Picture 1 (cartoon, rainbow, N blue to C red):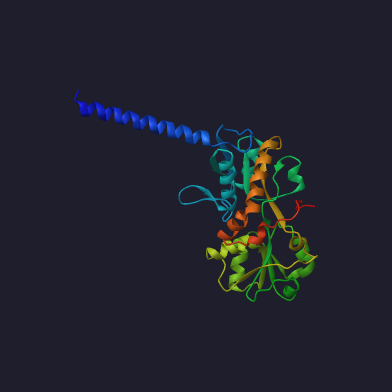
Picture 2: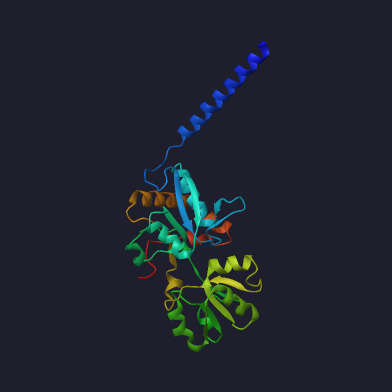
Length: 281
């Protein structure tokens, strides 16, 4: 064999050894901040619906959105790879209950009923109640003599029925509500700020509609105490809960959580959650 061929082989061997040593060093550098069990070793399995701006896969198929980015940070803090599974709403939580997923995310409200059977993280951000109108109304008194619409199932529905009676129109979903608001069949709408901002960004709500966070009104509890969202996990995995809470706390204190909200077209003050509470109490 020629001398230069031997030298080449030796050089290649040295390069491979150097890469192996480098990869080993990188692996050793990652030290998890917390110790907890996951369903698949080395992975953080997460379920969610497709719910922009909170939970979705971006063009590179990376789990993104506000919740997605927090999950990415939890995984990074604890040397894990994210495995994101898209499900429907009911299945997302059932995966956790059945121990097929470590965490379920997607703007889940913190409720006392859920806390009985599942682990619920510290508050992540607020689901702020908003008024959609053409003149920028931000109080419920301003809607008194108008045709108002909202979506069935929200916590504020019974309160709005007391305020507006027969002038309140109910809709099965946000799309139908927006269509009637755009066409002028109703004068104003009440829904979450996040839904309105995302819909307007995608053209579902006209640019002539102003979306304002409702000013606090004791007659509508959610305007005074907006629902806090949380991540759901197995009630028996308290170590995972502690890790989730630690990352959320760090991101809030550094301002990163507020930045994630504004990056998605939301308000930074949505990160100012206050003391933990339940939406159903």
